[in-house]
Amino acid sequence: MFFRDRRDAGRQLAARLGHLKGTEVVVLGLPRGGVPVAAEVAGALGAPLDVCLVRKLGVPFQPELGMGAIGEGGVRVINDAVVRTARITPDELAQVEAREREVLESRARRYRAGREPVGTEGRTVLVVDDGVATGSTARAACRIARARGAARIVLAVPVAPHDWTARLGEDADELVCLHTPWDFYAVGPFYADFSQTGDDEVVACLEEAVARSLSTRRTEPPHAVPEDPEVDVKAGAMVLRGQLTLPESAAGVVLFAHGSGSSRHSPRNRFVAAGLNRAGLGTLLFDLLTEEEETDRANVFDTGLLARRLTDATGWLRGQPETEGLAVGYFGASTGAAAALWAAAEPGARIAAVVSRGGRPDLAGPRLPAVTAPTLLIVGGHDELVLDLNRDAQARLRCENRLAVVPGATHLFEEPGTLEQVTDLARDWFTDHMAPVPHTVA
Image (cartoon, rainbow, N blue to C red):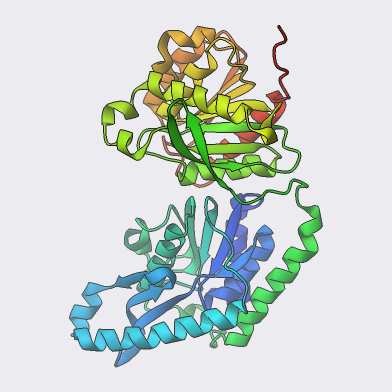
């Protein structure tokens, strides 16, 4: 036995998750037993709490044995090995699924009481349960969070089998567990009190979290961030789809140049953009290519073309009444970083600052010495090839510049806490260097 009850397990688990405190994290508890655990974690991290509605599909003659799980958004996970071993027929599986779907929908109405689910797009989602047995429920929860646009998924439980990472490693970006005993056969024996969690307790946990959020709202940053409106960005003869976010009294606007194969919906770029918005900076995430153009892979790696699109989009942005006179910065990811530096080197570009995340500034080639905007190059410590390319590119820059290495990070910054570090570095660089840039007077 490791825990007195679920609340005790939550407090112990929260101590292991301290690296998430102060980040843009949402805690999702798995009803019902995972919610009291998640409530303690959310309270310790100062994070919003919601439920991730998932229903285990129990074997008819042994309901505690999961043969799969269903969740919101039509997510369905089946453990084929259990189904085969228990000799479950398709009709039996369908009957169990229909029954559990009714329960799931009923609980959604009761738990949220008309409230909208907490937004997860572009954020770190921390999925919490009171333990993992077969892993079907946890797997479904992670897939639900992914479908809802989570930038990173952390799955955290107090206890699980010793081989749980092999079962669930592909479904979450980070796995956290306090105890992984070899003699594991069920979650309950590791709790002194593992009595069933009732619906009333789940509702109470959620209402407490809402009340806590309302009471602390006065300490949040003063910048009101509106919903991202879809805009048509005019780039020469082309019209590109984008999302423009302008916090109240924005100090400037950052245009995002995504890497190859990505778009304005990139969860990593949206994660960084949300951090900039909270700091009072506007953001424009837009597609550098049309859907038709993206089918030609040559366009995806045409740095000159992408830079021209970025330059044209900058001109369009500066012509909008709500952004007139605001400083403009560029955030480039992967190959998009080369386009950002190329565009920043154009005569009269008047770019206040550039940030590159895991970028390929070397692809900007001879344009690098002409860049005048203060430039921050962010590279993962384990992204060795790109790190060397950034060092070579930095030597060619003549502007104010810095190379920031994030320890332990690989190219996509998927490791725990690394994307948060990128966000903090970018935020500080832009806020330090972006000020309204006056138009040149003839």
